[in-house]
Image 1 (tube, one colour):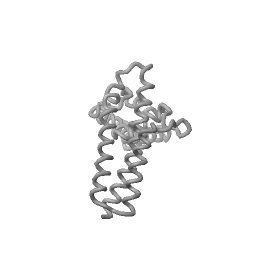
Image 2 (cartoon, rainbow, N blue to C red):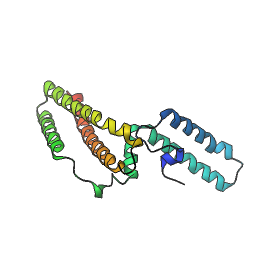
Image 3 (cartoon, rainbow, N blue to C red):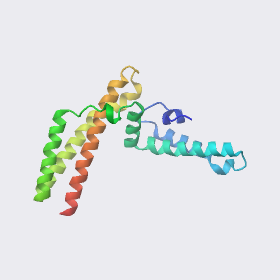
Image 4 (cartoon, rainbow, N blue to C red):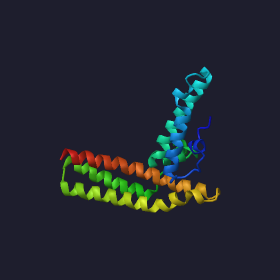
Length: 179
């Protein structure tokens, strides 16, 4: 049994897979592996079909969600292992430190205009990150294999930055809900 979800569906590894094909393949595999169709088969076959059905569900849930798909591909290439993490770029970390300081100030002295400014800054950073990585994501599938590692490292950096920003966005939302 392969744990490569793209191979499981016979699809190329892609950050932008054909969603209609993915859905069709998911439903086809669901029909193939549904326990009701294997009720009279051997216990081993029933167990195999149940395992296949589980992989099918996990694969579809992962590949259908852009964030889960990105994390999955990065994990498949060993790029989200904690022991191999390079630090994020210093300029990004400085920007995040500034935003965190503003959030700490807001915690002690809530202010709607400062909250709106921080929220706007975070959104602008997120939009810039998204716009910058989109050509890499869109072109990944067509890259020669020797160019993919560099693209994956760019995507990894993007992914980690987005996770960092998401935590800040959650803090902003929490402060906004309190006021």
